[in-house]
Amino acid sequence: KVCEFSPEWYETLEGNVTTATVINKDSYGMSLVIDTRISDGNEQLQPQVLEDDSDDNQVYLSTPSDPSQCVDLNDASYYVNLTSLREVFGADEDQECVEGLKFLKSHFPHNFTAEEGRKIPKIVHLTSKSKCLTPKMHLGLSKWYLPDYAVMFHDDDAVERLFEKDWPMFPLMKEVRSCITTGAGKADLWRYLVIWEYGGIYTDIDNGIGKLINDTLFKDEDALFEVERGGFPSQYFFAASPHHPVMYYTIQNTISRLLEVTNVHRQYVPFVTGPGAVKTGVYNCVGDGYPAAGRYDIIGNRSLTMVGRRGKNTLYVQRDALKNKDSFAQMNMTHYSNQDWRNNPNATKMYECYGVLYEDFMNYGK
Image (cartoon, rainbow, N blue to C red; front, side, top):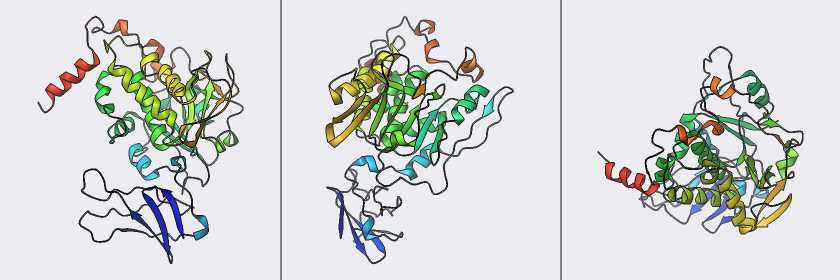
């Protein structure tokens, strides 16, 4: 029996061993690059990597496979590389918090696997400079710990590890990071990358969970955004399957807008890396930057769902509900609304993004 995953992959069953034949080698020709895209229908499998000089072009997986459980992985939304995600996330060690703050530990259920037939994986992604939170934020974020979900609280080190991965589908992605001069801009690009690569739900840490957020809301969706107050798709909260077209377009838009910045210290973050990039990414897919609630069929046999309505929404996400005036300062962070370029001593100097890239090139290796 053959289970077709994509034009490059196929699976055959030989007794109790699943083997996958590799058609293409990696671009460097050094080894056969194989990831956990192969599945026996019940769990993700970690295959061996064969060296290029091997005469054997089969990858042997130790987990038995049931012929009735073959899964069509041609749609990348059914694939999440959990091994890579764990490596990027790193150890979740407890931190000593200063008085008045409380540590929030991430949660990765034992034997957590991608659920067959589900597009958006049960993973909630959060990021913050510190995992020590104000009591109000700690209590509010604890409600995002949905049953059977992994909750990944990514700190600065985890964010850097994700950026340092190879991104051949996003040329100049690593280079343009030199043109991001605010923590908000960095968090913007990170959230698109983590959902592109691993899928799941992203929410800002100051968002409260709404009444309608539950497993049923995401079960049959390929991507989901809330209608923002201004009518465009939400960037403070969204969910998508891995390798979703909206995330692809959003990342490409972010890179393009960064390259066009004429002064990296005076860039308007909401337009360059923030909601403006998401709005254009959605426009690229549905032809409308202000889509109303509903489900839209888009490129690649994928879909996008908008929920809520223009104005103030509280049914899905209670935006900014968990912060107060001093909460970010208490956590040694600066809220995006307070990251004013006018307070930057370099704001009056002209630093084009291309100029920054040129200087990086000239200084490389020095």
